Amino acid sequence: MKSETFSNVWEALGETEEAANLHARAELMLALKEQFEKNGWTQKEAAAKLGVSQPRISELSHGKIDLFSLDQLVNYLSKLGLRVDMHIEKAA
Image 1 (tube, rainbow, N blue to C red):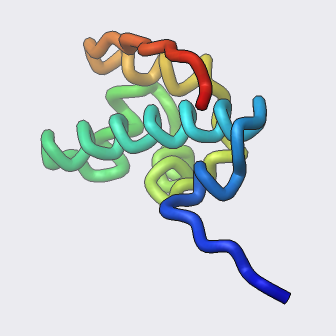
Image 2: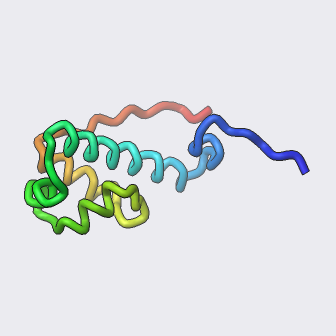
Image 3: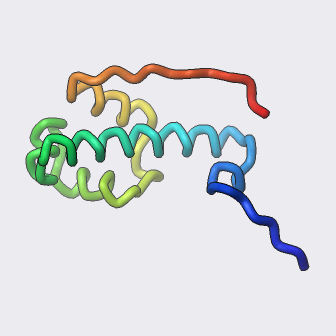
């Protein structure tokens, strides 16, 4: 049996609706994590800024993508004074 090699997980998942949603959520989660690190916030401090519990920030920081919706992530970024700008293009 021949195995396929992919350059990243998104390529392996293909052009599915689920893959597109996962990719968008992953990008937003990374943006949030970068903000926490950039500002030197502890999980407790980040939680206070977003009005959520510290365990919720831990879930985000550990990439538990299935626990977050696009809406939640966009709202979290907005609470930090950030705007999400989308780029849409034809799939390959």
